[in-house]
Image (cartoon, rainbow, N blue to C red; front, top):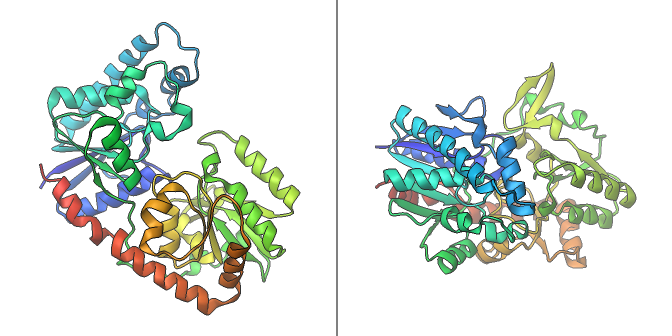
Length: 411
C-alpha cells in the first residue's frame, strides 16, 4: 500500500475540488492507503499534512501574478517573479514529500486551472525532476473559461496546465474534458466523475436541526427552494429567481446556503436587487451553514447537508460546471431538481436517464408545470427522486469508481 499526498491550492470548505478530494481520500483509505494533505488552506479536521499559505490562489503575490498575467498590464519582471515564487513553492512541495514519505502525489486541479501560476510551475518542475508518480486530477481546464483566453505567459500555460510528463497519469471528470485534453495536448485521460456515498443512506433529521426553520426565519407553511451553490456568476442564480417569480407563490422562499466572495460580492448584490424587483423572497443564509456542524460565537452553525432535507425543490441553474456536486447531493437527499442544461449535464448526466425539470437558459411552461407537480404531488416527487437515486447509485457511487482508483493508484 502507498502513502498518498493530496495537493492543491485549497483543500477546505465547500468548493467542488475540496469535496471530491475528501471522497477520493476516503476510498483510498478503504483500499489500505495512507492519506496526507498539502495546500494553502486546510480544514481543522483535515488529514495529517502541511499548510503552506503561499500555495493559496488568494495569496497576495499569487493573486497579483494572476491578475497581471490575464488582465494586464504585464510588467517586465512578471516571469522573474513567477520563477522566484515557484522556487519557494517547489521547496515546500519537496518538504511535504520528504516529511510524509509520499509515494504517490495526487494533484487536485492545481495543474489544470491557472489560478496559482507559480504553483503550477513548481509542481511541473518538481515532478519532472524527481519522477515521483503523480495523478493529475483535472477539474477545470483554462481553455474552458473565457477569462483565461488572453495570457501574458502563454508558454507557461502550455507547459504546466496540465503538463505531459512520464510519471503522470491524468484523470478528468467528464467526457467533454476527456475529448478536449486529447485534442489540445494529445494526453489520454481516464474519466473519474464526481461521486457520492450512495451506499450509505442520508441520516434522518435529528434534534440539532429542529430549530433550523426558525433560524432561517421561515413561517409555518413556507416552502424552501434551495440553491446549494457558491454565489458566483457561472451559477446563474438569476434563473432560479425567475423560476420562483414565475411560480408566483408567496410561501416559496429561495434559500442560498453557500457563500459569496470567491469572485467578489458584486454578484450577490445584483441578485438581491433582482430578487427585490421580482418580489422573490431571497434568503442568503451562508452564515448559518458550514461543512460541518459547529458552534461559533455562541451561535449554532448547521452543516450543508442539513439544508437538503428542508428543501421542497433544489435549483441548479449553472451555465458551466465541471460536473455537478450539488446535483449529486440533491439526488442523494431525494430532492426534485430544476436544472439548466449546462454542457456536462447534456454530455454525462442526461443520457443516463435522470428525471429533472430541465431548461435551456430560460424558464419554460413545461418546466414550470413539472416543478409545480413536484411541489404539489408528493407521490410523484417520491417516484422521480427514487428513480434518480437508483441511476446515481449505479454510476456515481464510491463502489462504482473504486476499481478505477485502485488501478490508477497502483504505479
